[in-house]
Length: 133
Image (cartoon, rainbow, N blue to C red; front, side, top):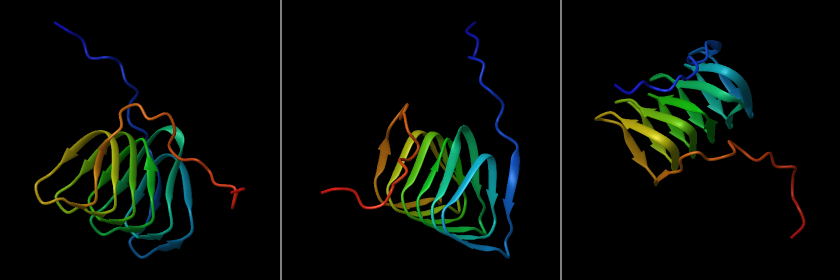
């Protein structure tokens, strides 16, 4: 019998953005992030292993960059899930979705491309402003 490879346990949720909260700007985090509120900006995992949960009450207007991403709310922007992406039955994504592995529930909607990118080496490139042409 084959044994499953040892993988680290999922990160603990250390950050919660509540349902009555609206944040504007880029949010960087490590570990676990749970969003019930509204984000106007990018969500970026700075760690190698991260878990991001977008609840049914949440909305994100910006890009999502993470290792494991679970979406049950509304996202307007591209999604980059280096590892696993789970789209729940109430997920609504308007943008392209890049993933290593994906689970899609009946009822989830994606208005954009689904692009399989296993083992992508980077989560995001930090932009330093306008560069030379």
